[in-house]
Length: 176
Ligand code: FES
Ligand code: FES
Image 1 (cartoon, rainbow, N blue to C red):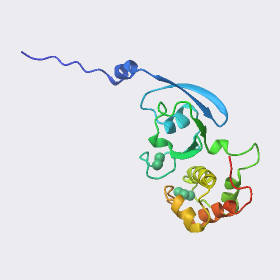
Image 2: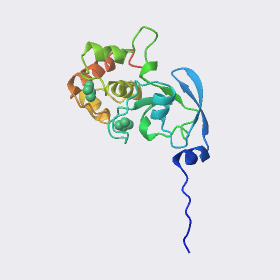
Image 3: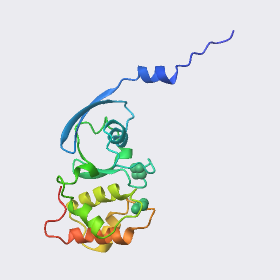
Image 4: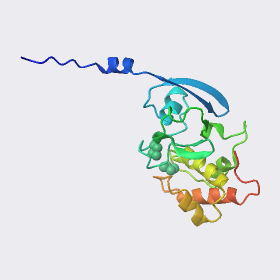
């Protein structure tokens, strides 16, 4: 006797999957969404919020292009499930400036010519802001070590370190 197998279409499987309600404070605004259980915070930011400053590089936690600041910590948003981070306060590159006034780290990246193609830059800047708030970066070697999770395919590291060091040496630091 032949067995009969029924295969659900991808559409039917997706419809059967329960969406998860989540709420975030994103760049100072409370926002609510319904996401699939596997939606990453990176995809929520880029595809649900259209905040495409946060970049998708490797999508595997290895390049840092997707770095955003979540509850004060810099994280790889490609590795964070939105459902798990429900309720978090998220700051992306779009939320760092104060109106027309750039964040000191943004300004320093411009002043020190710390980017070429710019693809890694939002992640570098978000990572640098949170790192400076951590208070452990005092020397170029500290910065190189603590920023080692943010890769730059253009090799702009020398200027990136100079930009971050310039902010670290400012009395007011890089708070956000
Ligand atoms: Fe997240 Fe590379 S895209 S670490
Ligand atoms: Fe091009 Fe860093 S500026 S990858």
